[in-house]
Length: 439
Image (tube, rainbow, N blue to C red; front, side, top):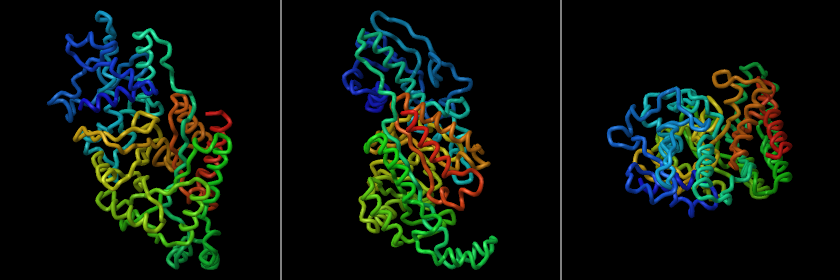
């Protein structure tokens, strides 16, 4: 547990000076040790045996605040004990609770129809801070206290800009009309046999869902404005799956997928695994799906995201790590956009069951397209959707974090944009505003 506490302290300090400054901060209630540190956080009892893992460890609402920031554990009281600043706000436990998805192991019965923990039942949503990366706000307080106790003004805040914009795209359906079954589907839905047949006979690159060049172009527009390193485009492809929710099943030998791989090589995009719905239910399938995707594309695949965002239990990430992934992009809620892990920075996965810290990094997903527009989720109109995502972007930029967006290739097609929220236009407007505001 000591290594996790040390990691959280460094994460909160959050600057290149974290290694040098972290020994100045203690986490103890032993008064004999106070004078070893400039700052001491007093434990709230969250990690105590008989409390950890029980309902008693879940914060109750309304939350207290410390300098305007919601506090999950402890009290806002601060005091001097000799030359040591004693902080009764347990920012260590509060940060741990958020970074690890801790409440999901205690509230195992709280799941939606797909086995996911609902964002609208989460503490960040219920307490009203889902749009705020409050772990970063804790970091602001920690650096403020360090400046106070060290007398040094050389402890700076992160540069207020988005360090990275991840434009990620889950390829659930690479083609709109790829088989005779799809011809029958569209005929029965009212398109008519003649029009459906014309779609089927189109070359793959003229299929309505073949929006990959357009999506790559949007990323290039940002890179042209910001530089190559600050924006990256990722496409997540399925490597298997046989559940009904994995439909449409598609083979990885499609010409367009090979063309997409080539485009990525030429334009700075990357390929990741879209772990199937089936693999979400049986995590060991992820390993075989990764191997299949690597063989088919020739890419070494190190990025993962679960289909339906259905990484159901925190410990399921054991298998993602075991499969050899370095980064996972699943950690967002389907029903509400925001900062699921309380942070806008990549964070090493911490297993709340074994209390083990991993080399694998989690990239918090701020927003999925369908989350904004679908009535069962947020049900926003175009302007509301743009404004909401821009608030997330501004909050991430303020703390020098990253922003991860998920837009599906099929939702920016000519067919999808004609129904409900025009996700294509929303995406363009968001990116244009982000660049114009210099975030």
